[in-house]
Length: 422
Image (cartoon, rainbow, N blue to C red; front, side, top):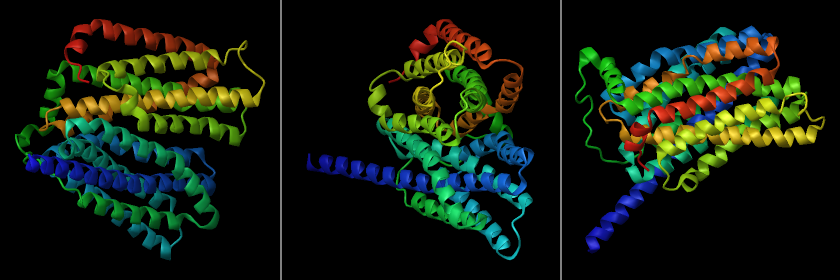
């Protein structure tokens, strides 16, 4: 009896130890990257004054994702996942500090900044996919929900704090210091991940056919009907979110409501704040609810929010009060962030629990590709803002999205109810 209690305490202590190491390591890495991303964007805009130059920086960060994600997923299934996350951090740190050394003897180059963003996009994709596949190896299914929710809260908190700290540092320094900060953060993160202690029955590269390494993951996705359904929905959800939020939400705040920079920042920040709070409270909010129910309810909420935001921009609903507009749209921004993060965490938990360990990395990497149509969504939304009123687009979009969600649920009712873990 005493040995059983001792063993239970040892497992609990080890779980807490790994939990702290993983989250602290992730925070240091993500926070450093958020500061760096803000600094490079600010520097490019400040130095060139060109929207095109800034757009190129976004493209060089996005393009590697479409190519690297499947390869990173295959690596995560073939090699030691912890070693991959550590290696990603080390390569990132060496790259960033190497460019800092170059900038120490030469003027900062926009082309070299583009190159650093390109390299970091590659290593960040490998890091993120490897970390997502590593979590079920380190923690049992009872703790995966908590780990995912706190992991998401760290990302949200970093997005809030990163630009604030980056802006303050920029007041007293230049772009070079951000390369030092980011480089050091990667090496510190690697140390924390190296200290993880866990046991796994997984053998590196087990059951992987060298000739069909990518095809095996695709076949798994094709044969598992519910996971395939989630993949298709993820493509749709990413398109709708970026179409409605990435372009229309800031456009409404700035062009329709004419908010100043401070008010604009508050309303935009409410989205990250909503994501942060919800991710912290996720285990309590969902309790023992079915993951699929939480997932589809989040999709319904997003669809309704798109309609409401569009409705609030109709001529009859426009309010000529800055304070009311800030409060109103900050509230809906908070709800946007809350719904999105609930959707993401629920999907992550379901996939991590249900995907076979041998192909987990590859299948998760395909979900990373679900945002492949994001540039098209942003382009269409950008064109429509110049052609028609926001409510003419958003209100029908919200209705159509909601009807599609209900149609998918109804058409796959048996499939969803038969495979719905808590």
